[in-house]
Image (cartoon, rainbow over all chains, first blue to last red; front, top):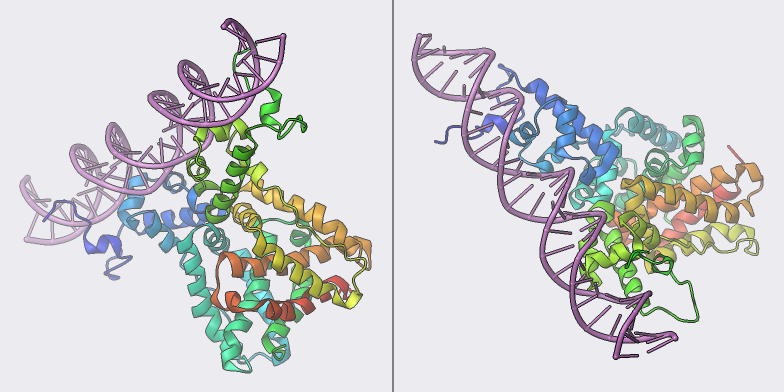
Length: 202
Length: 202
DNA sequence: TACGCTTGCCAACAAGCGTTGACCAACATG
DNA sequence: CATGTTGGTCAACGCTTGTTGGCAAGCGTA
């Protein structure tokens, strides 16, 4: 056996929860720094060296814990939209609820901005966004969609409006979009989302 | 005077229109290749070497004609949205007209996709998008906006929906968004844009 | 104490990048 | 013809990138 082969536990996040590894803090620091950098710079310009410097460790540690840059990105961009359960929400409030949810979600977690930045330039990032969309948005919206087979289309329309606002507001920093308050954004977008969700197919 | 300093005419596109430069074809080839690469790969991954290879010339030619990579991008991403004159369009058709215009615009000119890819990762690209937005969308929409000072906000809302659809359809390739026909997209989005443009402020 | 795994740093690698300057062929003009 | 300008190639520069392997210190167990 090689002297310093990365044992399985080295790549797995936590094999034995009873004995937390000493490196857990380092792992977390790397991940946090990676999210920051990916969100701020996108995939290519977020260098492993810069991430390592932010995390105050050596670049080679990143490689040991996450294999390579793609592995780091995969780990750093695990996304949970925390899509709310809509089945108990009054039908006429669905749009407003969704818009407000994502507005708050976006501003408390820069992972979403990172996902978008990377999804636009990197095919792996785009694939991840498609996955998140299908697995996390799909079911929630299908549950409240009038006709099940229309659900994907309606979900895509909603995604187009919500991602579009996120793009203008958090990535492009279009002044008029940045200047809107939460309530204003909700007031404008909620009817749109509501219609995409509940209106009969045109 | 240095022997081979780039004379002013070398950097200017065309100083003397009476005598077209022999290099015009090369310049155009570089620009076309640059647009392709920027659209496909984004700013960082679109390398000068790759662009030069596509244009079948030496990388140093790119430098001579466009100064540096940023200059090349600036030249390659000159954008004309060809925003239509809306003042003669019946008020109730404004939304549909706008949506269809940009749908067609996007599919016949990959510069728009390039602009979006670069605008997301590169600050210069974002600045350019803000400029295009302000200079080309602003006036057209202000001309049909009920209250002039509301025009920027309304324009940003419209941009959020149109850019969002472009993002889902042409960049992320979200299957349900790709699957929609032009008419379906117009049918769904036109009422949204129409409302952002003409509805009273909520 | 001695041994083995873990954590971490260091120095280096090969590859690719944007960019530069020397050099040559074709053309235009005196 | 000679001369200066333009269009183009070539080889290299300095630098940064992702990635690798070796080595030292810390810790756990026997």
